[in-house]
Image (spheres, rainbow, N blue to C red):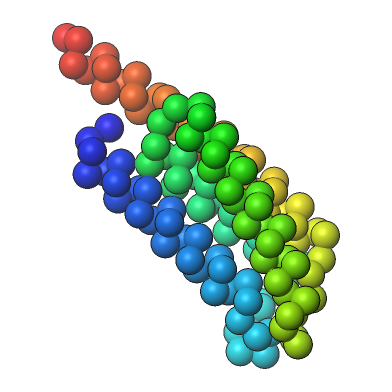
Length: 125
């Protein structure tokens, strides 16, 4: 994978962390929450973030670090919602973040592995 693409994916993943933090702590009446429960929204947000971060870096230690950081972020943000008047922490939201993180890292790591192998095959010809 080209270095510029790797860095762009990593930067997009870091930007998605910032978006998750802002959206998790903004007062509830300021944003439109849409339909459905929080599980699906948390799952999708953390899946996208984890997939981008996993695509932007290679190697099991880095992917495990991504999981650890995002799971810690999900728990921290749920606890910090106690400090807002219009937000309440919920276990289902936390589990949505954790499952989104796990599946996002898995999807990103598998995709990265395939892309790296295809690139290696192209250069060995």
